[in-house]
Image 1 (cartoon, one colour):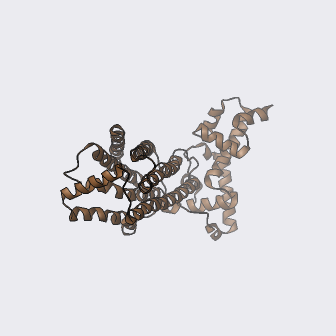
Image 2: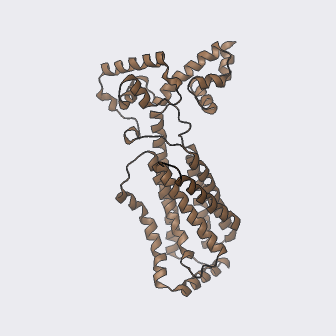
Image 3: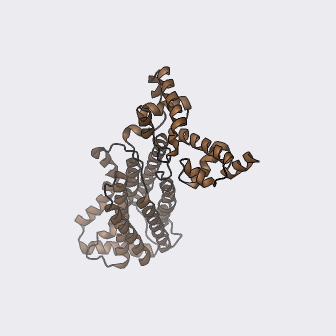
Length: 373
């Protein structure tokens, strides 16, 4: 256990240092730093409780449980920062009410009991737990339920923001491999399975002892360390979309109706001509703003034009051109498939294969074989 906890606070602490050294860190990186700082503190507290005599500072025995009210909030704030939603400090501080309320009993113990009484209380509870005779009070049951419900709510909110982010990058970018956060979606699922569920099992075992608490504690700590390593690795290497608030949309709108038919037709004709003659889709970094500047219209105007006339988002519109060009070269050239893909705006083999099959129903090699026979 000592080694495991040492790995936990070492990994999180090292990643925090790496993130702090990044120049011009965006808000997502700042919230990542806060999340990792929270986990660093938690691992350190667990380590101290297991390996160090805390009789001189016994209030540390009780503070770690309240920290579970911060995980969901910080992950929610991280997901919110991805979509460049405005942060109002006063309003956002309301999300900390549960943590502050949960901290009240610990603070009251600090003021109502002296050091020896706190040590005696902790020793008494530990003795009852180890002998499996400890009984949860109704206040503790409410506390446990509150932790679980609180984190599930914020898990749902974080997923909602992640879907908004994913929708927005497909509206604004033609290549999304490096800015997608599939790993964060997996992390949220793992966080529920490996953290929330073990917390439920850990505390339910107080009510009806079935499993040795040391085993449950080992599972919980192992899960948290694994999640911390996973999150640290991916967050340190993640690139985020440079969206502004006007580029973030929760769902398609009907704002294009304010443009008349003639204007839409004129813009779309100019766009199609530009795509055919200049082939801007060959640039893997092509974005909505870049393409809009090339044809001399606003990004929102271009986005609405594509939505109304092509009936797809920007990502799909550009990749249709890329796939069509690849199809032509697969039939007329014997060049390696991956070289053709890279020459036509794709920067990832896996993404290219998926996009190509989505549009054609064939893998690139199957298409070449079927169309050249």
